[in-house]
Amino acid sequence: MFIGRKKELSILENMYAADRFEFLVLFGRRRVGKTFLLQEFYKRHGGIFFSAQEKNDALNLEDFSKAVQNYFENQFYGKFSSWEAALEYIGKREITGKLILIIDEFPFIASENPAIKSILQHTIDHVWREKNIFLILCGSSVSFMENEVMGYQSPLYGRATGQLEVCPFDYWESAAFFPHYMPEEKLLAYGILGGIPCYLQTFRDDRSITENIETQILRTGSFLKEEPQLLLKMELREPAVYNSIFEAIAGGASRLNDISQKIHEESYKCAKYISTLRSIKLIDKTIPCGEPESSKKSIYKIADNFYSFWYHFIFANRSYYEMLGEEDAAREIMSVESISDYMGHVFEEICRQYMVRLAKNKRLPFVPHVIGKWWGNNPAKKAQDDIDILAFDKNRDSAIFCECKYRNHVFDKKEYEDFMSASAIFTQPVNRYYYIFSKEGYSDWVKNAAQAQGVQLLGIEDLFPEGDKGRP
Image 1 (cartoon, one colour):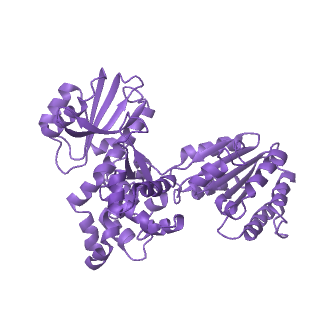
Image 2: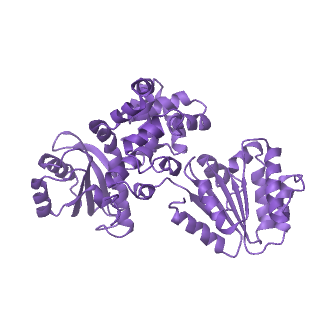
Image 3: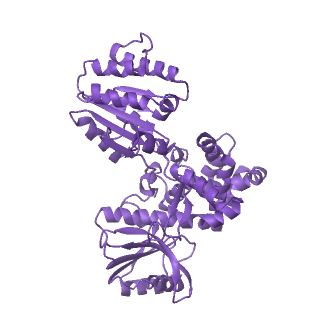
């Protein structure tokens, strides 16, 4: 079943409808659903769909020749003499309507034959430019697609008429995979699996979250049991070092110095490893909201929820969990305090996504110029403090302050006063708006104070569309 990707399909359809040559560079991290998206588009319109593989150039050219000749001739006559010949053959054929040519995993071809970029550039400029062809180059190596295909020094620079990064689903989109789950279960599923479609498809919403962890993550032979390890081995040369970085961040180390000390590597080396992980979209760099990109307060976090979950719970405990048994291990992971501690940072991100969605729908008091988490010194407390979500308008005359609590008790007076104390650090905004998100609701004192001060109180049910409440 195909879920989501309406925006991405709309972009593809608009380019397909244009009566001219179109060239789209489509990219995204592994497992994000690029091929599935292209297959759905291909089902609608047909064309030539070629998936390159990690093999030598001659074999990829032979496979491409088969795909092209089967499309035009309904049979295979033999391998083209060269990529130039294959591409020119397409340009010389009579084309009725628009011809879609999809080359999936393009980096596999280019790594064996770097000249393919120049060959494509020449073909586009001299053969395809006046043809009604829709070329789509797709790749999982994000850095390669950004630098070697779209980059200034690439022969293909300036030829693409569009580019599209396929990103993981957000919590709202991921909920569509679990129509029978209650709101809290949907949040937990997203917190564990993130927004990668093939991960989301492993959980069944006729089973509890605990049962799914047992059967789909902990059980020997399950797809997700060693998934992060397998992907690191596919992408990187020194998986042991990267394992250590993930484990350090999952264990609470977020600053470069803290991470480097924990993995016993010099800071400059650690920075290079982290840069690599950022290039493949597995690590994010975060700075306090409103501060410049060069801020020395920057921290790092695991960008993918499943990696975060796996390194938080599974990586260091694999031997223990195997002795404990899959069922009991799943129960231990889902114990109240354990999963609540883990879900704290996930819940903040879910609430940020909710606020961004409100902003896009013009349902906030203003459209934020910047939005994110803030941390720093609170002069009143003479201690470090933070604001889970902070948003400013362009002039910083208006601000939104948000507190997010995924706790197993109601939001009480002390938490409310701490939130107000933190927001008071920012004195410039004249127009101030307050939102609190709480998993377990609010004390009567907080409800009364919030009503008097115009503070919005929200629960986890408010994060989902009306009617999307899970099973009765």
